[in-house]
Amino acid sequence: MILAVCLISMLAGSLVLGQDCSGQGVTWGQGIGPPPAGCGGGGTGPSPPSGGGTSTSGGGSCVNPTCSSPPCAAALLGDVGCTTVSGTETLKHELVAAGGTIASNAHIYGPFEAGFTSMQESIIRNWGCTDPSKVYDSDGGKDVGIAERHVAHECGITFPRTEGSEYFGVVGPCGGHTNDYHFHMRFACLYVESGSHSTAVGDVASHKIYGKWEDYGQNKLPYLDACGGHFGPTPDSATTVYHYHVQDTAPYTIGCHGPASDGGLVSIATCRSLYDECGDGDTKSVTTSTGTVSYDLFCPCYDADGSNTGTKELPALSTTEISFTSSSSAQTPNPSPAPTPSPVPSPTPSPAPSSTPSPTPSATPSPSPAPSPTPSPTPSSTPLQAPPTTPSATPPPSPAPSPAPAPPSPSSPSPPSTPSPIPPTPPSSPTPSPTPSTPSPAPSPSSTPAPTPASPPESTDHTPRFSESRVVALLLIISCGSLLL
Image (cartoon, rainbow, N blue to C red; front, side):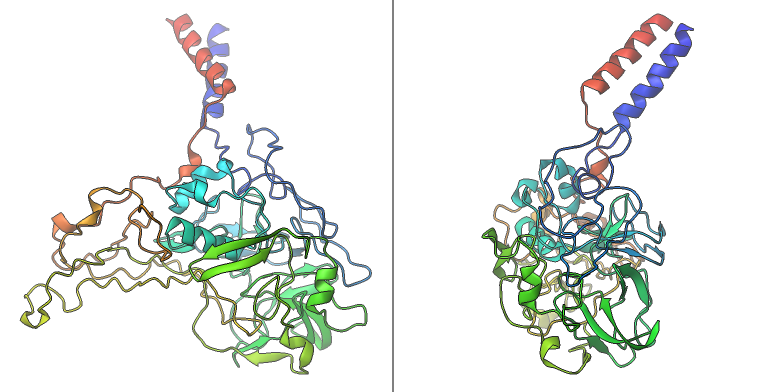
């Protein structure tokens, strides 16, 4: 009997000791999803704003909201719609494995993150930020894109980025995150970029939301109103209907529920009039690698320059056209591959390249992932930007392992004393200098990968945290051991 009780106590103790409760506010919590078993209710963390439409928040099945008399405000944290198709994630991201299925009826959220605090310290370290406090933000209310660019700037890292088969970003390559999966952007794994008009990915109140293309074959993107919708034919309707498209820039999914009360498109002013949070005086300055912008927290209505404080009207309101030719085929931000570190910026000691020392390739220290690692999609004067690069599962092109001079800096992987506004370089970045595939010529062991940063570990967010219940569990195990002896 005593043996049985001891075994049960030891099992319970081991479960408590191994439980990961570090993701509150990012992988679970208010407005995100339920906590893992054994983590409690987790009632702390940023509270959702008071404004927005009616929807469910937190875990469970997605509930599509209603808007009986449009235009309506959309929920600022919580469901603005639900997906109608499933997809497969291409890369590992937090709790979602590469090849993991994202089931249909997943939550569709608006653009905002709920904030970062010390509760997410291990997650932020896993992003590669050696001083997580630099990006703590208890207010929340910034869209995911500007939040990622701010993290990249403050921590001196490339963010988001891909390393091998793992993706590092606030959301994954498909556009969502957490165990109770919800989308903030992209829907990249829910539709195929081919043919003409993108297919539907979900329902938003009484209208459908589609992938980003009005006509993929003709390189046409849609003109959209402040809610993120417009009128036109779709694969589901030969006649003109109001519908939404996912966008490369905020609000990504929707800014409000349209159309306008007169049956037309929704202007910036009309959108902002739906939210107490727009123009309420809580504007913050947010700095990224491209400069400092004024940002109105939890205001989901963005003008033609991508600003939620500016007033430049969207082109959709002044044209009869429903689409425009994408400005370039160059793909926009998101999953930019990690800029293969080889941080040998200054050395290059051989100023007489004409002598061509035999083993050295002519352009040895190719550190030209120069500081433009695109996670910072600067809003252009056009309402939409060029298509985003759907992250590939293949590792980023590794630079030929040049037998360049051993980097002088890697001796100590300490963080840069002053995070430069040039995100990609700091040695403390977790970019583990992936020289994966085919290490071809002369791997000169002495100059192999710059010391793979020991911190942060691959999955810092699995670090168990001790609490009173864990101490009790340990005492039970010790007691049982003495009884057994």
